[in-house]
Length: 116
Image 1: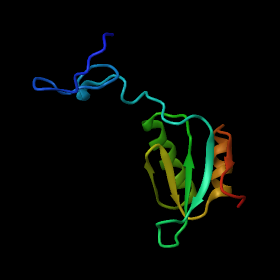
Image 2: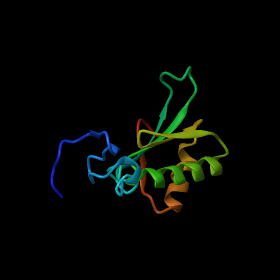
Image 3: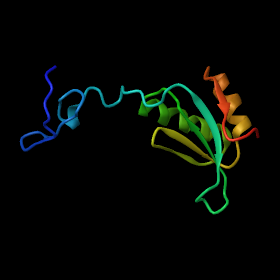
């Protein structure tokens, strides 16, 4: 693979910086691992009007795998949430339950920002 600095081409549109293919036909967009494998579970309330959100970060998964796991965790907790910036956000304080669910999936995790 030769390195080019081409970002946009008029005949094929946006070009992926990794595989040099058009973004529509990119072969690597779903296989890139996002996290570092150091999984942390945190409760965050800043900027959320006092409402708590449990954040799971550091999962070494692709974006598609994160979406699937996020959907599964939201269903098992019975709450809403989102997958943003390589993190899974679950509404409410579900740290203990999420730790148990992640261990069932074979993912080791630890609490960050104090014990629940």
